[in-house]
Length: 352
Ligand SMILES: *Cc1c(COP(=O)(O)O)cnc(C)c1O
Image 1: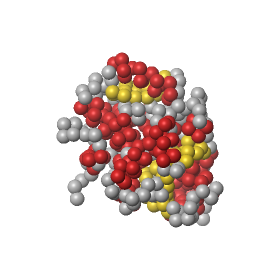
Image 2 (image 1 turned 90 degrees about the horizontal axis):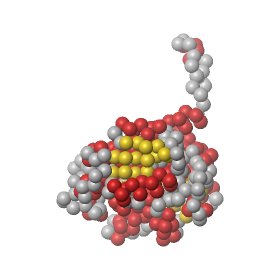
Image 3 (image 1 turned 180 degrees about the vertical axis):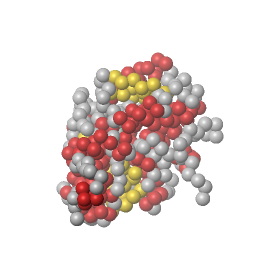
Image 4 (image 1 turned 120 degrees about the vertical axis):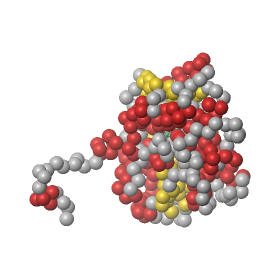
């Protein structure tokens, strides 16, 4: 078996690269698809549930799949620098891949609204991090202007190479399952990823690798649900900061994915997201970030409402790693106890 060398090598024939493209990879992709039997028994006993654990990518989120291609293409066209707006994970990924390519990286983030782990990554990898007193949508609008004027490569998901790279996740899911799932749940922020998965599934079917297509099930946070509500949200609010977006760049593509696949876009409350977040960590041993758990929160809701048929095969994408935002886990868990360093003191705390 040849070693895994990242998504461009693995899915080269589906991607817009040539022998001349310099490949910047951190061996992203090939992430685990884990069956979640215990969780399924409780939230969707009529279905088989699998978790696509994208937090296992090199910088801890699915953004790496798109970034490997976007940065490789930026280098190929000799861009002066790469730049993005970010709720955190795009900046972490751009910083890592851009650094590896030897390109300057500029990132704009909403001040005070990015999880510390993500900010730390962007800084560690040497990006120039600019915090703006505004939200993601405002940051993206500024970045678009700067990239045009300075001829920097924009590496947000408006960059078509991002979605091309991200579609490989759908292909991996099919390879791992031996077929396509019947339902695929994803958190939706800027709506690039759900669009990319749908493209991946369709291309895999066209190539004869699968025969069926899943229903695409997008899940937004209630305070940041422009697609569900049908209008831009000026001040999106949710503690799931990775999907705190009021005007998604891939809005139309996402709607198309949902309509073509007979899926839905729905919204869940922050409370429902946190319940799913804790269940994933406690019952399945999978620590994802809050935004990721929106997928499982949406599944829970649909299953309880009787919208999930008997025998369904469900995949939930867990988009990012829980360690990026440890504050939330610490804040919602029971406090740890500190006692004297004695056997008795420790025994007194055991619940046996
Ligand atoms: C970027 C991101 C999302 C949202 O993906 P979109 O493609 O913007 O819809 C969800 N979860 C995490 C952890 C992310 O980093």
